[in-house]
Amino acid sequence: MLQKVIRLARKFFNYILGLFSNDIGIDLGTATTLVYVKGEGVVLCEPSVVAIEKDTNRVIAVGEEAKKMLGRTPGNIVAIRPMKDGVISDFEITEAMLKYFIRKVHGRRKFLSPAMVIAIPSGITAVEKRAVRDSGERAGARSVDLIEEPKAAAVGVGLPVEEAAGNMIIDIGGGTTEFAVISLGGLVYAKSIRIAGDEMDEAIIEFLRKTYNLMIGERTAEEIKIRIGSAYPLEEELSMDVRGRDLISGLPKTISVTSVEIREALHDPVQAIVDASKTTLEQTPPELAADLIDRGIVMAGGGSLLRGVDKRIAEETGLPVHIANDPLTAVVLGTGQMLNMPARLRRRMVVPTRLDF
Image (cartoon, rainbow, N blue to C red; front, side, top):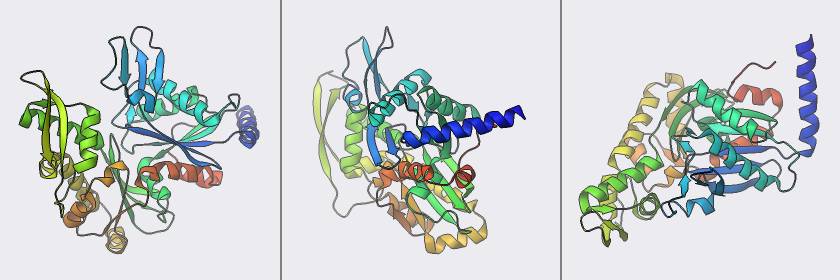
């Protein structure tokens, strides 16, 4: 009886707070964090990077300002990514980053605690889920709901996930690539691989090191991927000059690389994504697989913007592949739509992480 009273009191208290606080949805990504504020839309998109002092662990900068420091900090300051492969690798720094983003979107309303919906990879463990939830609560949330990234992306791009029909989505992020077939609001089959944008950057770094004895940083590799990277032959191949450090002489060096070379460098991570797409289809029940012949596959996430990746997957699977209108915000828009759902429907969609007392 007492537990029931406590539960009802908590729900009433949360309801009162909800009248004055703008609840938020978060796509807590390895590379980028996006925040959706209820009633306002997507209000923040910043790199998931934090710069701290080594000796004191004092936070110096967060987000865009911290990313500019990657590879350029003095010895007593380090710029780090507290998320790795879509999960928390540094609990305290992730908490500090979340607090910064919450303050930034909530302005001066520090005394109001928002409810949060946070997107997580579908393949993480129960311990990792709890770490995400605890980080959100310690950062100031009055409640935290978790939703799998592919489900959030499907909701965000407008797929009819509540229907009794197959919907397949591929979400290529920074740390993970998510594959899911969704029907009746649930994941019929889901697969998560820790190969995504970061691994593509690392593949480019390794290729230039082996081929040209040139050492480059993460930011340069990402720029190469964006400017001339591709997963499928281009009608007109591209090239660009790349600056780095010569591993033999130790001096600065400039070389010219082509999109053909970078496509070769990206072969392994791209092939892993293609293979996982085929595995997902092989595990899909026949009736739902038949739906996908007409509906096709929808792609979201920043990695889906790699030139020709949709053509490559379409060629390998034999299904039509569509890239979302705004793939970068698909997941966070899905979390935002969750905030507007009735509580009963939201409970069906979110990940159960613990029993309510």
